[in-house]
Image (cartoon, rainbow, N blue to C red; front, top):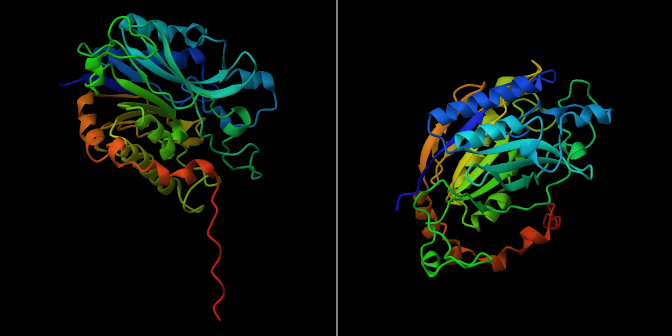
Length: 358
């Protein structure tokens, strides 16, 4: 049974430290309107989509830092974002948006939400778990910093897959009267025919297979991942600190594609990723490469620029079943009794050195 939906990645080009919030929001709404004209049902926006990627800066003023965060418990009603959610509801399009979250207790998170136009509310929130970079800035005056560990706490909501209603007209439902996640006998024997199963991750999470497998074990069919990824940041990463900007950007794009394609394949799911890219503040390079990837690991659509750009693809979630029932049939092939080290140990512990030769 075909289970087709149309999805889009809304890539956003450079946003400067001095950019006007209203102008940035207008750009997002323009991309959303374009997505509507192309029949998109789900639109993904990037990580920290509303501002420049501020963790590259060291802020000494809490007041200035807080201007980059969204405050309050309901992101759909924030003065900075309400227009976008209202427009999504008006167009009948689901959206996923990345933003800096400041909780009522004052804690900062790198967060994203999934808003369902049919339900008229946020269905799920995710907080970035794998925070890259450092807490303290590098000593070099020209060093490119990434101070996420300074401004955010690691996410505390886990990797929770969820179903999105209203995207498929032929989705199986739980029998009436069943609660607590119970499903009808028909649904129990018809795995892969319900409402789409989605999961969110943010930027660096895509490099960690544990995140993907956590979703894969919940039957995920579509991963949404917004990102801000440095094209050139030799103090943070890279195979060679003497690389040129062009060489470093090529490497960053290669590893980005490798992460999305290989993990989509190994978990038999589609993925869509959306970049915040271009030259922020006319100085800091962020890669583009927004894409939609199939469960076989093929790129179905990819951005051609490092500016505002929408990519769209119709996908058939039924294609996930090939991998989920054969090569990556977890129930048949996984050997959990051998995987203990993955959760028992965090850092590397090498085997003991061999004795010196006599």
